[in-house]
Image (cartoon, rainbow, N blue to C red; front, side, top):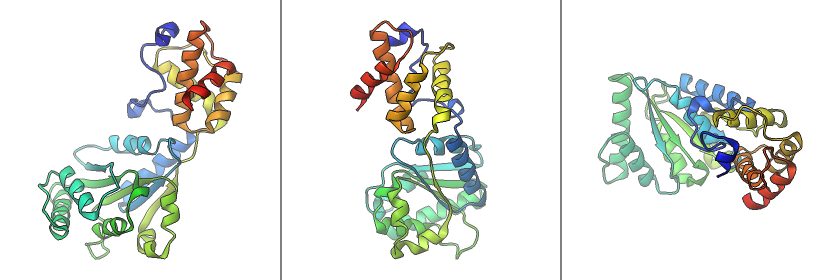
Length: 265
C-alpha cells in the first residue's frame, strides 16, 4: 500500500538490484578496485566487513562484469562443513560427478581447473562466502588447492568473503602460510554520512520517485541509527516510508524513522 501512496514502480531499498544499479559509494569503488586487481594477478584474496555492509554484493558486481567466456565463477555459500563437503560443493559447481574420498576430489578439481585454464582459456574464480565459519583444516585445504603448481603462476583465483573475525584468525601462527599467500586483504567500510542523502535519492529514483521524500532530520536519524550499514539503512528506510504513508505524510520525518527503528530492531 505504501508503494502506491508514494507512486513507486517497484519496491525501493531491496536486495534484488542489478549490479549496474548499485549506488557507487566510496567503499564500493575501493573494494571493486581491489577485487579487480585480484582477478588480474590471480591468487588468494580476503574481503571482510561487518554484517550487512554489502560484501557479497560487491563480489557479485565484480564477477558479473567479467565475460563468461573468459571467467567461470564457482560460488560456495555454505562454509560450515568438512574438507570433503567443501570439495564436493566445488566439484558440483565445476560440473564434475564428485568422487567419494578427499584424494579423488582433489584430483578432480585440480584436473578440471587445469582444463579450464589450458584448454578452454577460462579463468576459474572460487568464491567462499561466510568464510569466517570455515574450520581451520578447511582453510588449510583451500590453501593447498591453489598450491599444486609448485608456486608457479596461480591458475585458481580464490576469494574469501567473511566477517572481520577471519582476518583476526589468520594472524595465528597455524595460518601463517595462508596469510602470506593473500594478495588482497581488504575491509569493506560503511557508507559515509555525506553519501547517505545521495544513497537514499538513488534508491528512490530506481523506484520511480524523482522528488525529495526524506527530510534532512530524517536523514540524520537514519545515519545515527544505521551507523552506515547498508542493510540497516535499507530496513530503516522501508519501515520509515511505511510509517509515513500510514500517517498520510508525503515526506519522511525523524518521527517516522524513530517508529521504523522500533519495528526494524
